[in-house]
Length: 314
Image 1 (cartoon, rainbow, N blue to C red):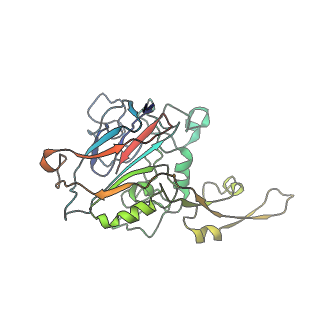
Image 2: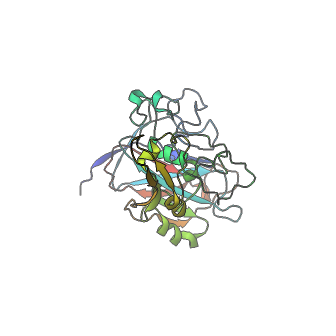
């Protein structure tokens, strides 16, 4: 049976002391002439050395073909020394791109062409502008373990690994650092590799591939008001439904009460991710696994009706 080729633009990403080798992971590189990358904050937080990664290059794949994903991870997997979980995800869309500059896409629309950062192709982009704004103003989950870190922000920008809320592209730090995430995300799950395979039913059932996500939607009238830069979006149903704001349309209009709405967004309508035990690798060793062979995951590419996609390993 004939298969149709799709452009699979792999702005491949890596996180947490991992390096993605096939397809070649960018580690935030674009077209650097030197060994060091120019901007570690260009698209995502890789938490990796500045000399890692591969320069940009679009790749083409056939749907239903097998892509062997290969990586190295510094911290061990498959033994008692660490609790290791490796997650493979992808996202696609017309706005996903490499860009032509190593500068980070602006947070201020005034700095983008036609006041639209989503369509300014000068800058590389994974998640879009609106996604980051929701993360920026949404209350962070204060029930998460923060160790001894003093988190500087009350929004989902701040996590144990990012206490200052540093911006990397339009990535949401809270979503990046925790899985499965509890708010809508554009990332689709491919596989979860875990030291504890008894957790697989949980990951398969809770994946956004099969289970929708709720979010709090605040009235547009409130977001457009003078409170716009001071508001916080509730991150749970109780606080969302308790939200109330008195709105005055004009000096000659009666006041109206604005309320939050707890809205269920649909799942990605995809099969659950494959879940299995991780392959063994040893501590402090960015090299191959058992027998000197690379650690890999063989992914059968789905029928993706998009021309631009990005893959990440975390």
